[in-house]
Length: 123
Image (cartoon, rainbow, N blue to C red):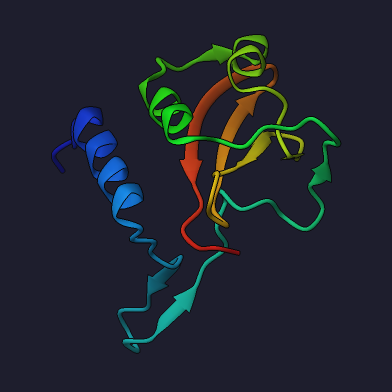
């Protein structure tokens, strides 16, 4: 299977954000033809802790920065650039996207940020 260049993924994500096109998270059951709802790993789970006051929202400039970073990154570098997350779980920090009900999730292995993802819906 050919790899999609990261630049293509970034441009596609930027286009989707700019156009306000938000897909819902689901998978397709090829045996029945029915769509099956899937959990969105970029949306904070119900047991994610509220981080408290002074938390950050991601602006459009922040979204571009998140997508442009070379991962892995240290927790300190992420915190210094984007501020404290609004919510967090054991392995993920969640930042709300300014002006939407969507989220950016920064995924960690220990104290190292290894990847990011965007929520698919406004949950």
